[in-house]
Image 1 (tube, chains in turn orange, brown):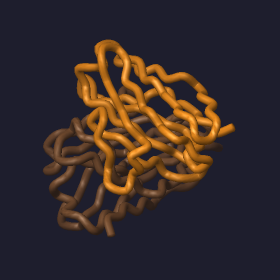
Image 2 (cartoon, rainbow over the protein chains, first blue to last red):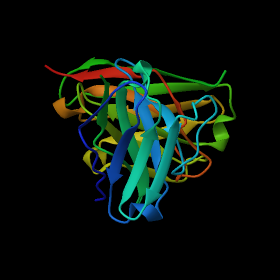
Image 3 (cartoon, rainbow over the protein chains, first blue to last red):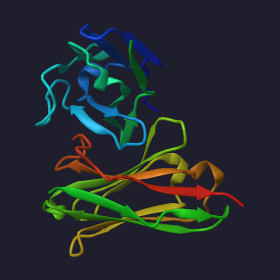
Amino acid sequence: SYVLTQPPSVSVAPGQTARITCGGNNIGSKSVHWYQQKPGQAPVLVVYDDSDRPSGIPERFSGSNSGNTATLTISRVEAGDEADYYCQVWDSSSEVFGTGTKVTVL
Amino acid sequence: EVQLVESGGGLVQPGGSLRLSCAASGFTFSSYWMSWVRQAPGKGLEWVANIKQDGSEKYYVDSVKGRFTISRDNAKNSLYLQMNSLRAEDTAVYYCARVGRSVYDAFDIWGQGTMVTVSS
């Protein structure tokens, strides 16, 4: 089965840039989606189809995807961005979620 | 307002059954793939099942095949998950999610979740 690997944690100071990677075999050939989940809340879609943003999501959230790595970038990080982030793809008749990354704002 | 509201969770003994429901509003339910996603306490997201707009295609994670059944009633704008032979490892918050017009689309709308606890 397809596996998506994310770093368990990323720490970043306010105003700096956070980059969250999602590794998978030839992931660049798939559409990658990213979700933000805050404690006790349902996930929220922040980036879809590698690099598109749903309405209402700040431009500070961006995505890229190439080769074996997809990346979610959060620019000018704010305290409110502290959350768990998950990548996700559809592969071989299954939805696959990444292992999740906890972003801590220092 | 686009909304998904789950119900039906609760405490059930191992080997028991439970039926989850998800009421959709604010969009044309019959135009979208729908899904169930779960999250065990303190763990990550795990996809459970998808169903096509007309119910003609269904997909499941291996761990629930033969035990869980996803279904929908487009006339009632409702999604269901029938869960049989429940195990302790099925304990989780179960989310209903809208997938999109294609199975490749993202989960763009999520419900608030319903808790299922499997314990004696």
